[in-house]
Image: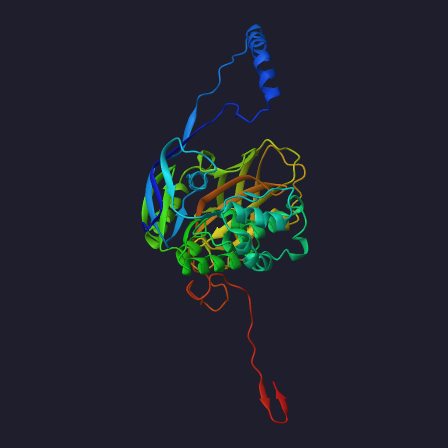
Amino acid sequence: MSDTAIRVENLSKQYRIGGPQARYRTIRESLTEAVQAPFRHLSSVVRGQSSVVSNETIWALKGVSFEVQRGEVVGIIGRNGAGKTTLLKILSRITEPTEGYGEIHGRVGSLLEVGTGFHPELTGRENIYLNGAILGMKRAEINRKFDEIVDFAEIEKFIDTPVKHYSSGMYVRLAFAVAAHLEPEILLVDEVLAVGDAAFQKKCLGKMGDVAKEGRTVLFVSHNMGAVLSLCSRAILLEEGRLQVDEVSDEAISVYLSSLKRSSKIVLRDRLDRGGDQRTRYVDIWFEDSRGRRVTRAVTGQALVVCLEYESALANSRLDFGIGIYDQFGDCLIHSSTRFSHLDDGMLPPRGVVTCTFPRLALPAARYRVNLSIHNRRERVDHVEGAAVLEVESGDFYGTGKVPPTTWSKVLVDYTWSLRGVEDGGEQQ
């Protein structure tokens, strides 16, 4: 048997943008469409409207080639729109490539999107057996793993409830449990783990580590560079659909972080590598000190104001503006969101500036990455990774002139120490 688990050769995927998207139609709809088409065309000509369909296309993937050996754990990294999810969808046979091919040798478990592979009308129990059958497992094999799956997902109370009634967190917990425990030879995991809470993410990463130790093959898409570094011996960097780097994890991550620094120099309004439908979008970011003066560097322990200019087509909507400050490994050190503040954005103007003030910046001296997000009722509207680089200089956070290095503590907190003596007859201050 060959040691190659995955082979990708000149893989490319093209999408048409700007025009109407095709959908599945019933026979009745197809016949109606055929009868009405000439009349619609004549009507558009009479009104002077063009019936030309946009032929603009983009390459989500272009000429990607690599191999993954059995037992390898490989990270797939890159910015939004780099083609990471498209790659996994092709390998999972969800979509067909435009050019090239991807071969997989072994039983595949995929966790790409919340709900992928689940039937909403079936219960959690029924979906476990359905997914196992799709993977080619016998019922006895599924029975052997069933209790372990339910325990991991922590949904025992709802196991006989149709999954259409599950929250997104319950859905993803069960989906990951099924994908990881039904013993696939190859596991494909997308950034969907971000849906869960911190404890669940830690649990999933631990399980993926166990899967890797068992000698199974894993392709892991993530923006968490710490997780990629700890789990993956190798990482593949995609940029604009093309493979840029295929190296050991720390080298690939170093190139990726350098590319984020370059991107942060691009005017935010012109950034194209962003997520969401962008009905509201960030167009500028800058930093100010406590006196309202623009600064290029912040100081530990002093005030920092992050100013975010936006444009919106969602006037009078309640939006959540978010800021994430990340270290060099992609770990989020500070997350700030209007969701947890008293900001009343119910009458959102079409253009404006939202500001987030940190009265005493609790970060040691280092260079940090700032990610931005906007959500509308928890639906992502805009997301920009590496929107800016925040340079922090050392300051007198504790009033002692001394601050621990980032190797000791990634964030700083206020605290006090006291000392009292204790004698046999009682306490002495």
